[in-house]
Image 1: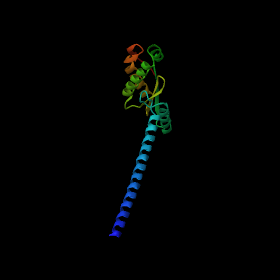
Image 2: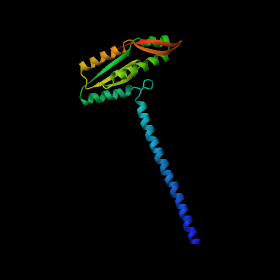
Image 3: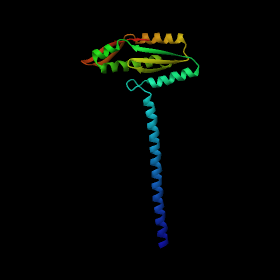
Length: 170
């Protein structure tokens, strides 16, 4: 009977050791997955403009370089919000942020399926059109300009809600 208890105790100790090792491996695996997930998220966030959710200058610059390297041809549209400084000066930066966000949404909808939209900086946006020649680029630019001409935007200004009309130059 004494030998049986010793064997049983050894088995329980091994079981505890195996459980501890298994738990350690599981924690290590979960921590590794979390680190990979965090790194993936950091890479995504580093490529996005936090205000608009669009690609940022770093990301679009890399995409333009890749398009140039491919040799397949591409076009780029630079878009600037008209009189944007006066929006910030008159209604405050929160109103300006609202205008930027509204223009970003409208641009993404107008460009969808044709190319990639990015916030280049300030009130400037950039559209990368892979495989697009000058005629296609000008056609899309006109569609964007027309689609954003007088875009009604309601934003919170310094003195409450304000209705603005936005237009862009390309």
